[in-house]
Length: 324
Ligand code: PHE
Image (tube, rainbow, N blue to C red):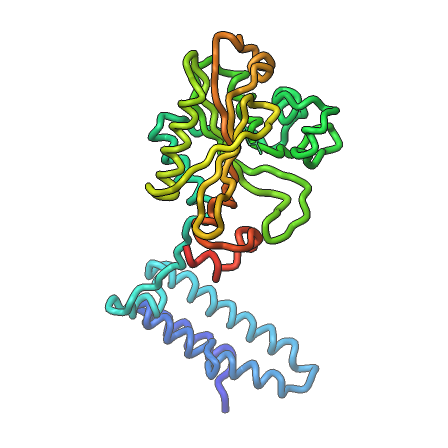
């Protein structure tokens, strides 16, 4: 004859009084609620009963089950929440290594470039990605109806704001707020409605540099860029300055580096700040001179690491990211 629910409840009470450790408690729990525990067996019996007897018997079993569960819960806390496994903690086992993240190659390239310019006395600043037409175009001497604007075209919001298409916006934001001397570096995302392929993305990263003072010359720009590119690409790097056009600098140049058998590769745009830009931010163009430069981060990271497809940067494929 199997014990009744009542006798089992009494047995449980008595046994509970004898529980002195987390280990005892676990044995107690298993004896009643385990796979072959007393309560579990009662449940089996319940299933075999004729339907009219099930209800009251079921209620009794549930009562007992609840009593045991609550007792285990409250006593467990009194043993400092220690579970059976904690009691058997083996300090000689090797630890669990949490997966360790690394810098994304875009972030580490930005950090490295900022580090070089910080040594030249530049401050790293940032500006908004959602911009006004004024900061992205007009203040940079790009009239709204001028063809020069095509190259910098971008995404617009319904409120006439836009996603900046160049970090040159930060030149304007900084000059609006501060008087020279200024030496800043502004890394960040930019957006252009390009069709995505191996070398184009609708979003990429640029770094903008700006130096304004009373005595800054074009030769200073040349010296700084020379130092920077040799620091980044190595002492022996050959550098070429080529005349170019940007609406916001005059004269403007593009800078190339010599890259093995691929010949000259364009690496950045630069020039002396256009007097119209100074006027827009309320600087006296005859008092101040300055230079600005802008470079694409993805392009530099691709060259340095031999990456052939810009899309790898944004796919977050760990097989790619783990290599850096
Ligand atoms: N803003 C230019 C571009 O996106 C780069 C640039 C910056 C050129 C500063 C000159 C001076 O192409």
